[in-house]
Amino acid sequence: CLCAKYSGIVEDCCCDYETVDRLNEELLHPSLQELVKTAFFRYFKAKLWCDCPFWPDDGMCRLRDCSVCECPDSEFPESFKMPHSQEDPICQEGKPQAAVDRTIDSKSFRGWTEADNPWTYDDETDNSEMTYVNLQLNPERYTGYTGPSARRIWDAIYSENCPKYPSEELCHEEKILYKLISGLHSSISIHIAADYLLDEAINSWGQNLSLMYDRVLSYPDRVRNLYFTFLFVLRAVTKAADYLEYAEYDTGNPNEDLKTQSLMRQLLFNPKLQAACPVPFDEAKLWKGQRGPELKQQIQKQFRNISALMDCVGCEKCRLWGKLQVLGLGTALKILFSVDGQEHSAQNLQRNEVIALMNLLNRLSESVRFVHEMGPSVERIMEGQ
Ligand code: FAD
Image (cartoon, rainbow, N blue to C red; front, side, top):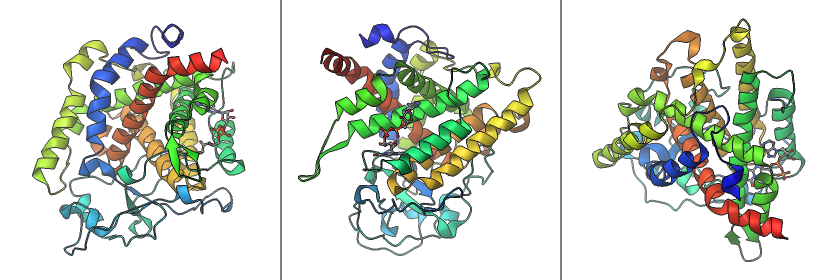
């Protein structure tokens, strides 16, 4: 039974599995699902070219289910765009790229800083290469991206930048980096399994439970790492609560913007969450001892490399979600381990970082929910065979 396998406190965290599942079910998942649909949170700015700094393009970018639908101008909230309009074209995967107004930036980023994030490689300031994507129209799911190209990315991440443990030489901080990446990897695999192309001939999509079992459920440490990553990101969000509450969520539609702010408050200051899991992860325990500062620099460099590797992902949609989620993790790291000991580095968050952070939390919340709801029956079926 899954509940017996995953009981007690989530390793290195301060809440138990049962509480996480309950809070996710009752509170986090419903609010996050609403939040990511709002105009502020559904548009993500990204550079989507294959621009790998480590090896040449491997020609995987042409897969149909991999392509990302960019947002046409007319789709943006009024305050994001230049004053001209078009009919609303339907944005679909595989359709020719829509024209993108690259001048919207100065408007949409009003009230937000352009502070650097030392944990990530992304340079979001070169607008000529940036595009906006409606995340709701480009769900993270099976894309057909597999084989040596995908394997090379994961191998480079694990072997060069975030070695697997157990290894006696690894210290607590290095294990945490590994667990964050492994938890994210579990979540990506769960989304692939949850929305899989079952029959290409009739374009039929659905759940692939054996894939979910083979890639995640049959490895309890991968499930544990997923819960860990969820709590880590949740801690970052709650730590930045005072800032996130009053951030600039203006999209030019006062009703929608009020809704965004109210959903954020529901998430950030929920009494149930504060009572049951006040500090999901205790970041104060890290970077202690003599090696602390040096270790922080080393792990920061490794994480920046992982972030740069996202430009090598040879499938546009996977790259989009890879970039978003790695930026989300980088934002959580920035909030929790603020630069040069400044307590309030959260005040230097960029708009894109906040969008990435909350969308990542939503993805992790979906994965935790999927594992909690489907896990026991999938295990029974697969292990009964
Ligand atoms: P992979 O998932 O490629 O795993 C490679 C190896 O890593 C495994 O053999 C195992 O040793 C190890 N491993 C696997 N899971 C974990 C874990 N949780 N923790 C620790 N180690 C682990 N494909 C899509 O269809 N849709 C997507 O949206 C998508 N997004 C991607 C985003 C990124 C950033 C990358 C790099 C790939 C993405 N892919 C996506 C591809 C997908 O992740 C797999 O690589 C692909 O489906 C092939 O899977 P696989 O069975 O070879 O194992």
